[in-house]
Image (cartoon, rainbow, N blue to C red; front, side, top):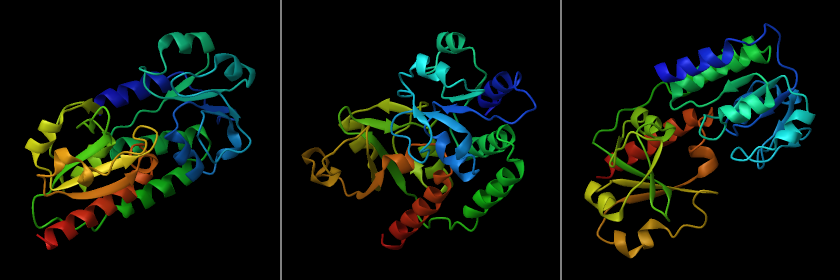
Length: 262
């Protein structure tokens, strides 16, 4: 949390008091929040495969943004991910004020809702959205048994969500436990480690990072597991935005149903 707040302090310290009017989104997960704020019309550029902004120009991917196109749009604000993909060199080349969007948990998502609400001149809408998101995860039922979860990010190579990820926070809030742990967002692991963790529920995502995976229950290496398997959409589970709140409720129901049947 302190790391995140420091990033926000640095990124926002030079922001003006005026609402942003021409915005380029280089962090796809931020698109959902901007749509919820009703600020789509202020977005002039987006990364490839970010839907919901029909008037915006495509500016490449979050991994390889097209600097020339971004400059031509004359934005007054960039919303970008962490330094791994949006380096200081790119920032210097563009010379445009930047909001760093990199939440790892639900609390940090609420911070971004608040901050982006101010940036778009939508503070009241942001306050209402924050209130509704908090309400969405009230009344969760504590699972009656311990439920260990493995979350597959990709089959080949076998990658898992780490404890510094939005997935881990969702699992924890829903009453579950990560069966394989490492203090990263995503990390490479091995089949032996997964089997040794003996997950009660094996969640696997399908999307650009895990295209057409073989269902885990059909893989020979997992024949000895007695796990239940849950398939989810990558765009719903691996992006840290407002969908994380409904995912907590979804997982809480999955965990409680598991306990009721075991």
